[in-house]
Amino acid sequence: MLFKWRYILFVLFILSLWQVGFFDAGRLAKIQNIWSFLAEMFPPDSSIIPLALSSIYESVVMAFAGTLMGGGLALALAVFSARLLAPPTVRAFFRAVLALIRAVPAILWALIFVVIAGFGPLAGVLALTFYTAGYLGKLFYEAFDSVSSEVLEAVRGVGASRLQQLRFAILPESANYILSQLLFIFEYNVRASSIVGLVGAGGVGYLILALTQSLRYSGLLTVVLILLAFVLAIDFASSRIRARYFA
Image (tube, rainbow, N blue to C red):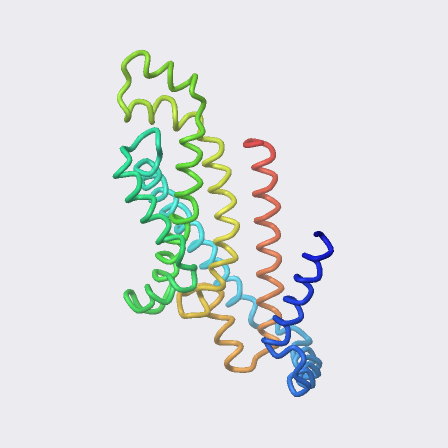
């Protein structure tokens, strides 16, 4: 049985490569263009460092704002989606809302808000806010529903309302998980901010798009290297914080 599935997966793999033109000799011949592309990248253009730092700072600010706003929206939606806090009809409606929000990728949210709010970081912040809300909302209501029954029985035993159960039992029990997930999504949003910028939603992605369109590949390399350093530093700091305080 295992051999049969391996054979099927191998055939599907080959078919998928063929479907995307992997075996097209004309396309494969163009791979040699990568050498000329790399040659134009070196040496990195140091004159663009100030602009790169400014754009990356804007991306980090976008990610921070989008994470906080999205986290707040996710908490609100999670309260109305949790089995322990909301009646079935309300719960079903808000879970459907979360599923709809989550189904839209960050770059599509960016396109939507570029149309609504115009080019710039505001569109990026709104895109990251909605993406974050969809992603975290599901995690948060699942965390709420997994709270220990003993804790809930204790607060219910003194006649606590659902709001009081949320305040004195569910949120305290879920706090470490919520903060850990907020740190994780902030890491993701720093990277995602460079992607949403490619459609005009501000940040370093907008600079990357401009450099690519103007064929300034040496400047592009400089931006990518600085962005990589920032992302690695943020990932390292976030991992250390989660390991120390939320493990």
